Length: 287
Image (cartoon, rainbow, N blue to C red):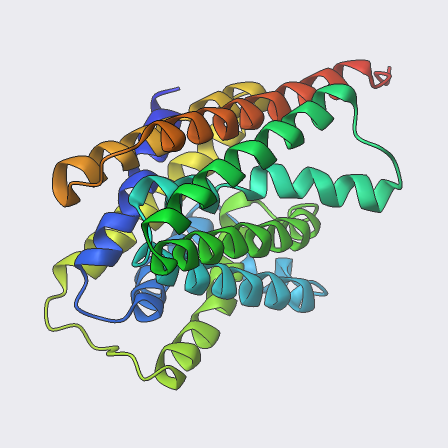
């Protein structure tokens, strides 16, 4: 539980350092991954894994996962600069809702009533948040949409990482997919004409440590020890922390529509996790 709370607080703090970095948003993503990946690889080796030989036959899957994660980070980091910290965090986590939709399509089945209710609440909440952003400025709406796109791309990343996780440990899978994420992020940052080399290294180093090493590392650890419902409930920490940071540092005050929309999306996240637990309980247990 301690690891889970630390993970969510760390991940919610990430957008702050993206804003504070003196490099472009995509370049910030590049440094986040490039600085953390060697550490994850070293941890995987120290744990007794053999990343290169263990990934034989999975390099295509890992490469696609890496490109999807690069696209996710690029879209999210650009979106962070154009909307509130609270909205960027909520929409960035929308993969939790989008991934089950992929499951419905792949299995050719309708969602359960609970899942359907979750998706409906999420749609209403998102509409309120988007409407509020549109009333503020077109720039805010663009930021929201980019963060929503990031959620879709993160769901694609989930799909391919699920395949990699069938044979690889969590740390090794994360390390190798991160390795595949680095080149596309650098190429895209250069293609967009961003400043890549930091004048002040502190924000990008802290971003790598807080978001990638502490945030992702603690989340991977927690995923192996806690139920999906607990993980889902803990996700609610992120928008609260992000909203508090946005209010304290950037004076990003939430209107009534923002609060209601955020609550609806948060409830949807919990309902989706609850439905996963219910489905798992109904599955026949092998002897």
